[in-house]
Length: 152
Image 1 (tube, one colour):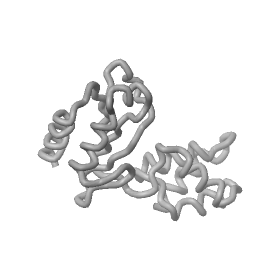
Image 2 (cartoon, helix red, strand yellow):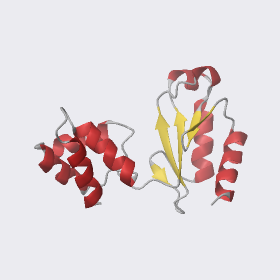
Image 3 (cartoon, rainbow, N blue to C red):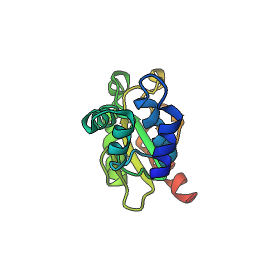
Image 4 (cartoon, rainbow, N blue to C red):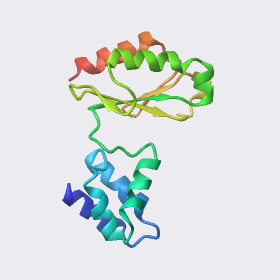
């Protein structure tokens, strides 16, 4: 962990306002921003731990724990809500037996809310491992889980 954090700091510390770049680099390397990285980053950038922690917890795209092998993001924005994303969300929660910001016990899936995937005309929308899906039904969700599970 320390090597990834030190590398991110070294690459970005001389940029103006480097905190976001450092956090993105750490997450790109490790998959999340470990709580133990917060004081290291704070000290290196001459910030308080509270400032760094505040940024990590404010932005929904920073994770504080290791993600599953597959990241499932379900849009919760207005257009998707108008097309009943709540039904898809509830189905996903039950199917995976987890809530948002949690990972299945086997480490296969992490479920996250997002607030607009830019696919409003095809809502409800979902992104899985960076692949965008539109007009997603509970059956589509189940098929995706089965396909991803079969590849493991």
